[in-house]
Image (cartoon, rainbow, N blue to C red; front, side):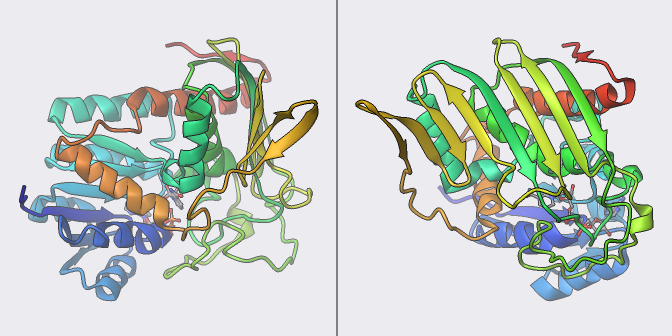
Length: 367
Ligand SMILES: NC(=O)c1ccc[n+]([C@@H]2O[C@H](COP(=O)([O-])OP(=O)(O)OC[C@H]3O[C@@H](n4cnc5c(N)ncnc54)[C@H](O)[C@@H]3O)[C@@H](O)[C@H]2O)c1
């Protein structure tokens, strides 16, 4: 069936917008068109529009919403601005694809979904890693019962040195938190999704700022910090602005009796690759990155590496599939696969970890 093209507006035209959101919408060129690019920094909006042939740019996202009335808005501003721009876009009648983490607090996230309900529009949070082939394979294996009874998991997002230095990630005012909100959110979302999204009932957390708030003089790369294709419009970085954690660790009790340990760091003195993610089941374990099943074969302990086609797919692949899924959901062809309860579960847990780190005590989550 032929459809009118959905008109997309971009808010927050930085790294991920240019590297992943624009390619994702462009991959759907027969179904959507990007009509506007907006940012509070005029250069970022103008540069993005010029680089990609987008007809309109704005240094005031609200004006874009008022003038263009897009059908879809991609929100990829820093975390603290996810909520206000999502609410504004919903009020202007748009469906919203909002970057992770949904917001900087559980209450804000609840409010955002309530606003989507009231507006009769869809809100989807961009947990783009779920759409990558290896993680899709992990999900299908986890769901098949292959692991037996799952009882424990570790979610790791540990970088040896990989502080994002191009934006405002390192500033609490703009990002709400450090690696727990930046990369811990991916790791926790993935693990909870794989084990069937049991509710998090209580969390105990600690955070440290030990390395990233000083000048180590080390040579690092943007790729190590999460921008493998570089950054078109980097903001100058000053380590003296660093006021979030550089390591966050959490112990999460789930309603099912399972437990999850979460570790997220941008700077830690560990060998590369030791921040791994795994799930323990009674029949087998599962490790991610790369995907392996840790089990037995007859009398022998044996590991299996599923050969997932396209497992080395490009960085933007998750976003490309995520945007295609969102359009199908808007068209009523699919249910949203990134569910409100899942997103709320993750942000409630992460915010609880920060509270626990402050108080030094376990925090029970009210549902
Ligand atoms: N899904 C993923 O894998 C992934 C990867 C990277 C980043 N992200 C998320 O995307 C968001 C942006 O990350 P980035 O790497 O593109 O950062 P960035 O700093 O490169 O881009 C952010 C842009 O937002 C603009 N901005 C700042 N304040 C604003 C405001 N109040 N209103 C509108 N725009 C504003 C900045 O000028 C900048 O152009 C973050 O929330 C981050 O967590 C997700």
